[in-house]
Amino acid sequence: MLAEELQDLELRSFAWGTLAAAAFEQGRFEDSYTWTRRRLELLPMISDPDRGGEMLELAIPAVTAVGRLSEGRDLVSQSEEIARRLSSHHRVHAVAQAVDVEELAGGWAAIRELTGAVEERVAANFETPCVRNARSLLLCAVAWAYEGDEVRVQELERAADGLGMKGYGYALDPPRLRLALIRGDLQAASRLLEVRPTKTYTMGAGLIAARLDGLAALGDRRRVEAEATPLLRPGIYLEPFALRALGIVRRDEALIEQATARFEAMGLDWHADRTRMVST
Image (cartoon, rainbow, N blue to C red; front, side, top):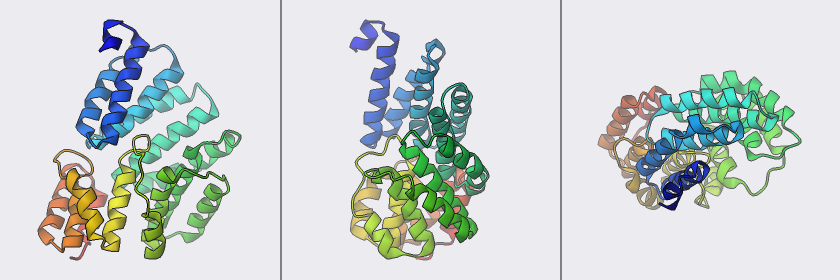
């Protein structure tokens, strides 16, 4: 690789980051993780905190996509330490990363505890348009929806909608889809599932998990078969979601049980409990 031959630190960082992103978008999460770990080895040699924060942020999707949520939380902590020394925009990104990881974990109580910090940082960052502002508010709304607090949900939805972010469906539709599913609004869910996102890396595997859950709820076997089957790979975060979605549309109890076991093996207890409630 030219970047390695030139011994250029930043060029190597960008090259490995690009390879990690490309692998993720192609569903090669294991390769994305490999390139990400190589890139993170350069982190102690990066003196620019802005660049270091960017490296950490882009590492989190790859790390969590292979089920390493504890490692993802460690990266979130490092990112938060850097963001405190930088701008309000950096601090929004830092809390957004924490919310993203807890979404993957099913840590809705943790997200509810983070809601105040999200609101404060979004308010401080109001002058800087950023999809992270609206997405984090919507994920907080999902957390409160699971708690059954519709008043709080609507407050957070209005705050997100008031930011006026248009053209960011890849990031904002998945939490809106989760809200539609919680409310049993399959018509809204169907609209939100019309277009398959072509960009998933920066927001992580949660986008794909939400889509699988939505397609399964609609009973759309054709799309579930097409989108879930390539994800039947042990060790990746999305495997149990794929198993569950396939189990629902095929009415296959064995697949549901496999999904439950996989969730448990990764320590995703909330997801395992939800899977036990699935009726085929």
